[in-house]
Amino acid sequence: MNIAVAQSGGPTCAINASLVGVFKQALQTSTIDAVFGAKNGIEGIINDELIDLKRVIKTNEDMELLRQTPSTVLGSCRRKLPSIEDEDAPKVYTNIFNCLDKHRIEAFFYIGGNDSMDTVQKLSEYAVKIGSQIKFVGIPKTIDNDLPITDHTPGFGSAAKYVNATVQEIIRDSSVYSIDSVTIIEIMGRHAGWLAASTCVLRANDEIAPHLIYLPESRFSTERFLEDLRIERAKHKAVIIAVSEGIELEGSEAHIDTIDAFGHSNLSGVGKALEQLVRDKIGGKVRSIELNVMQRCSSHICSKTDIDEAELIGGEAVKAALRGETGVTMVFRRISDKPYVVTIESAPTNLLANKEKLFPTKWINENGNGVSDEAIKYFLPLIQGEVNIAMKNGMPTHFKV
Image (cartoon, rainbow, N blue to C red; front, side):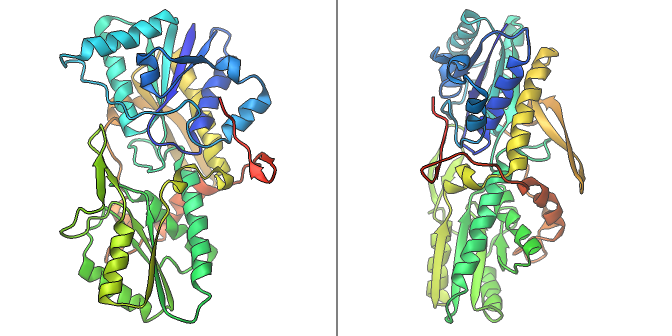
């Protein structure tokens, strides 16, 4: 049999580790012959643009370099497949299954987030409809950590580690001057504030900042924000604020740029809007910092736990397909925080596709401007360990197809 794997959605610094997990498990399975990589997600299957991965990943050194290379080495897409009942569905799905049959592909693995699981679900449903025996298995990935069922998602731990290291450096930078200052740090999170919330782990390193944390899960009030800030300014010369990009500013949608194929808004500028609000209403030295795409692929400070787990869950996906499972997504189940123990299982993809897991409101304080210490126990294990990054001429080196 042959298998195929593709990557979809936003890049992370762990998504290639899951690709390595699929590839490595395939090499260890005598019944698997070719391992194809589809270029640019499901579009590579639709357009019959496949790469024989055994021709490009030739050595153990290649696998290790790919494992620690950020972004999607196969390319990505945000292609939404039509519902299998739609009028134009037969043409699209016929192209997909013709490509899979042409290359004798009996299992297809899709590495991605909420929307990518929508693709896995539709393909598995169509396979049942036409009597195809091809197996479709989802492998989770998203820095947003917003997939339900799974305890966490590959990519999140490394993004959280980068965000916290960066915020800690901003704290040091802002503390050197004698004048009062306010720094607002805008962190990714459209509807779910997991990344911004993770900055609470800095308290484990005896930091008292960020002094304020605002998440989409809690109603945001500009009046309350300004009052919160006045209270913190009375206590601290340099006030640090972490804010999710998805908080809703009253009466403003100025930070919504575009809408993608899945109906999600692409956000930017909430930090700048709050900067202007503080400047107008309070004054003083104020700046905003948008971490933007750097959060997604900063592999130079990735979490070893994250990279190791991403590889493991890719391998487990192959095992699930070999057991005959289809229409499933691999998930983590946490057994304990300390010692940190997780297991990997499969769950029906329809429980994850197009669904979001929000940050628990029980971990948000009463005023909606901070996160409880209880959340620290959840976050800390996910950012542990460092990868021995391959370097060349003083810079990280990356695997390229």
